[in-house]
Structure formats: C-alpha cells, structure tokens
Amino acid sequence: MQYKSQAVAMPYFIAAIGLFVGQIIFGLILGLQYVVGDFLFPEIPFNVARMVHTNLLIVWLLFGFMGAAYYLIPEETETELFSPKLALAMFWIFLVAGALTIVGYLLVPYSTLASMTGNDILATMGREFLEQPLLTKIGIVIVALAFLFNITMTVLKGRKTVISIVLLLGLWGLAIFFLFSFYNPVNLVRDKFYWWWVVHLWVEGVWELIMAAMLAFVLIKVTGVDREVIEKWLYVIITLALVTGIIGTGHHYFWIGTPEYWQWWGSIFSALEPIPFFAMTVFAFNMVNRRRREHPNKAAVLWALGTGVMAFLGAGVWGFLHTLAPVNYFTHGSQITAAHGHMAFYGAYVMVVITMISYAMPILRGRAANSTKAQVLEMWAFWLMTIAMVFITLFLTAAGILQVWLQRVSDTPMSFMATQDQLMLFYWMREWAGVMFFIGLLAYLASFFVKGDAKGVVHG
Image 1 (cartoon, rainbow, N blue to C red):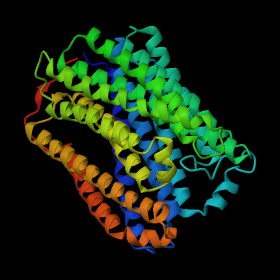
Image 2 (cartoon, helix red, strand yellow):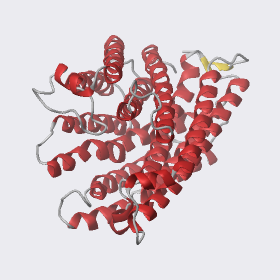
Image 3 (cartoon, rainbow, N blue to C red):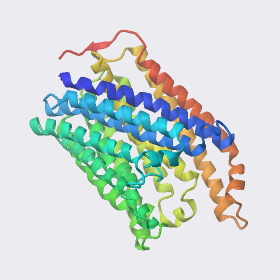
Image 4 (cartoon, rainbow, N blue to C red):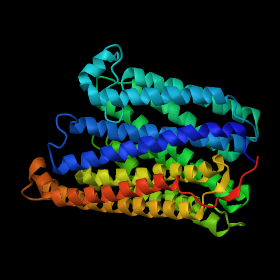
C-alpha cells in the first residue's frame, strides 16, 4: 500500500541525484588538477574544489537518507507522515542553505567567508570535511532536529518495527555526533580526537545502521522473505557494526599524540570491522536466493546486491589493508587512504541510496517498476559506475603503494613533490576511470526519462 505523504521523498531524491552530478564534476576537476597543476587556477583553486567535492558528497547523501526515511517510515509504521508540510519546508531550507554554502566556497575567499559568517564568535571552520560556515552548521542542526521530530512522531503514532527503530537510532546518532563539529579546542591533539567523533563515528558507526535498515527494507519488498528472518540478520549486523565501529575509532588515534594503547585497541577492533560488511553481503545474497517472488524491478535488486559486495570490498577489504598500526605507520595519509575512501563511500552509502531511489522512484511515479528499456539502461549505469570505481580504487592503490615505497620505505626517500611526479601515470588512469564513472552516472540519469511499457501500476 502507498501512503500519500510518501510523495515528499521525491524532491529529496531529485536533489540528491542533482548534487551527486555536481560532486562528480568537481571530482573530475580535482583529478585534472592532480595532473595539470594550474587547471582552472585561480578561479577554482585545488583546496576549494576539494571542499566542494567532499561537502557535496555529504550533503547529497544526507538528502538521500532523509528522502529514504520519508518514504520508508510511513510504510513501516503503517501511518501517514506526522507533518508532510514540515518535511517540504525543511527540504527547501536545506537545499538553499547548501547551495549558498557551495556558492560561498566558490566566490568568496575562505578567510573572508569565515569572518562574514561569525567564525570569530565560535570558531568551527577550517577543519577537513567540517569546513561549513557556522551559520550552515546551525542550519544543518535545525533541519536535522525538525526532520527527527517528524520521523520520531510518525514512529510513535504507528506500528513499531525493527527496521524503523534501527533507522531512527542511526538518524539520531547522526544528529548527535554532528554536534561535535561545534567543538574546536585549541589543543590540536584534542581537536583531532573529537573531530573523528563526527567523521569516523558517522561513516563507520551510525551511518551503518541507516544503511542496514534501508537495505533490509528494500530486500523485504523485492524478495518477499519473512520479516522475522530479515530482522534477525539486522540485529546481528548492527551489533557487529556498533561494537567494531565505535572502538575501531582507535585506528585514527595511532599517530596524533594519543596514548600508545590505542595502537592495540585500534588495530584489533579495526581488523574486525570487515565482519559486519561481509555479513551484509551474505545477508543480501541469502535473501535474494530465498525470495518468494520475482519482483519486476530487477535494477533495484542488482543495486541491493551490489551494495553488499562493494561495501565489503571498499569498507572491509580496503579498510583492512592499512588498518593495522605497523602497516598504517607507513601508509597513513597516502593514496591508499584515498583508494579506501572512494570505494568505501561508493560501495556503502552511494549505492544504498541509489538502491532506495531505484526501488521507490518508480512507485512514486505510479508504477511497480520502470520499463524493461529503462531498467536495461539503469543496469548499464550500474556496471559502468561500479567497474569505473573498481579501477579508480586500483589505480589509487597502485599509486599509494609506489608513493609509500619511494617516499617512506626506500633507503633514499624522495621528497613529497618528487614522488608525486612519479605517480602521474596512475593519476591519468584514475582520471579516465572517473570519466567512465561520469558516463555511467549520465546513463543512470537518462534511465529516468526512457519511455516504455511500465511494469505494473501501483494502486493505493
């Protein structure tokens, strides 16, 4: 059954995809700046392009999470959303605030932007991934609180399910840990210690709960497997994710001035972090193999399976490659970190949001699934983007291994910039893989406009 208030998810999904396109364009600009140093300089300096690339990633994923929650929660709770009007109002506030922030990055020098937006009142700017001006951060908190109020009230008045409770826990965790972005102590060690409470505990903690809940919801819908079976898996996955993810924060505490015991705690629990992702992969394939019905939306099933596999490879395997302290001693801050970051974000969060959009969008447009033509194009987009991301990761890994050898392990270590010159081939290959990814993304966009016989019409 469809609920009228689920329609508020659509603008969130459209904005998410639009911002995703922007993120990839800036990724391509950055890739070119690695090999053509003065590309678009001084109009878009490297540090500004990097800020825009990473900030767009975070903002569009948040739009995706919110849209997914607004679609998923009414169906799970079997009741209309508490306030669709509040959801739409927050959508516009978040979109305008996000757009103005990006425009500010591009048009105003960062130090000027800081003085214009009250950074002298409470200094929160200038930190990687948390570059947002104070006003934007406050806006994010207001939007998040209004969103959580809306979702929580809907859950309280409706049916309680494991999926909605896990999603709620993840979303509340996301909002609570973001508050540490306002804490910017003068002591650099303490600053980094708590900085990871946002950056790590988001992506390797509470976001994993959001991801697991969304994946479980889609798998219930497309496979028809009993809810009880999927819920048992969900309990196991979120327990593993929280235990390994929270203490696994220690793998960021190896070399920042924290006590030595973090090298043990960080190494041991980080080594266990691939387990929840492996469990998620097994879970997805297991549910699809046990399916009781053939859902017409084959593309959504493909994205769901891809999420499990790519999250395990990117977050699990590539995370494990350099997470043990004796290895990390040589590899931290190298291109190996970038390889892990790209594949982990794509595999875990980009793909799960696209899974949700792929499943929900046709229904929001009045049909159970897109036409066969549209789905074939969407599957092409899946394979182009996923294979491109695998190549990006492999090229960055090769660059990282060579970088570590030339700069840190060799008997005659080279300087940073001399080493970078030796990596140019890999950077060019990474850029071409990025172009392939962008072509895949354009194919994904085009799939929304392909006409054909819709697979079933949703009534409700």
